Image (cartoon, rainbow, N blue to C red):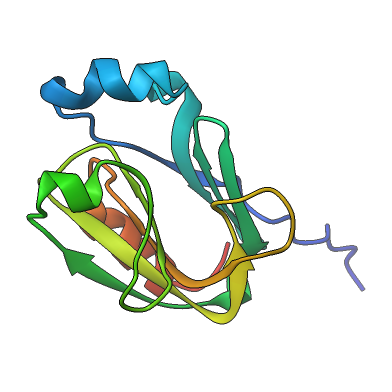
Length: 139
C-alpha cells in the first residue's frame, strides 16, 4: 500500500480593497490604507482586515455572497453599521462590493464580542471573484 501525504489546505486567497481617490486621505487618517485593508479567504477561515478593524470567522460560517453597488458614498465609505439589518460595512469605494452572509453573526465593528453582525459588505477590487471563491469548495 502506497504512503499518501496528508492533504494540506491551500493558501488563503487575498482580495484587495478598491480605494476611490476621493476617500484615500480620510480613510488613511483612520489607519485604513491599501496595505492595511484586505479580505483573506482560506480553506478554514475568512479574515477581513480594515485598518484597525478585524472580522474573523470560520469559512463554513459564510453562507452566501451577493454583489452590490454602486453605493451612496455616505453609506459605504469607512466602517459602518447598517440600521436596516445590523450588518457591517467596510467600504473604501462607492463603485461596487460584495455582501457576505453568516450563519452565526460575528463581531467586527467594536472591540469585544458585541455587537454581532449577520453580514459584512466589503468593497474589494474584484467583487465577482470573491463571490465566486466563497461559492467554491474550500481548498
